[in-house]
Image 1 (tube, rainbow, N blue to C red):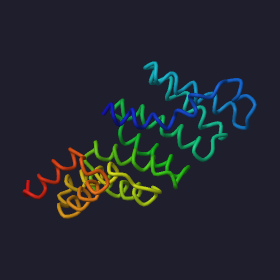
Image 2: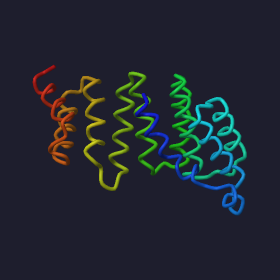
Image 3: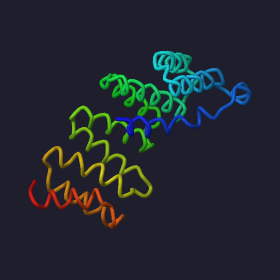
Length: 185
């Protein structure tokens, strides 16, 4: 769970790095400053405050594209940490709507689906990650391999593990899962 949250927080780094002085000079400055404060509150463990700040930043209607997606992602991270996964899925869906060509957000939603034991939905989102990525990596195929295995789609899982191993021949986790899959377990 911590890995999912850490990965999802990466999308917030551009907002967190923005200073109040720089934010005040740009369109949407107020919303971006609030999102930056939300990120800081989240990092400090003040989850309720962070959720409220992200909501306020979004409600201003100033955030667009990846800035809006990043704020939605921030809310999803916190909601996931609080165990409120259906709400987190809703936020990630809105993040995807704001930045539909960004594979990162599909991957985050897929990871939440996976924690909710919804491998078919997770696999569909991991497929979008692969489709949208300029150069899909071994971990992209391995992520999908794992959910395919959980969905009992053995042949698809084997294919994805093999693709992961072509891209990274010494990928230990993929090697182990592929051996399990081929052994029929």
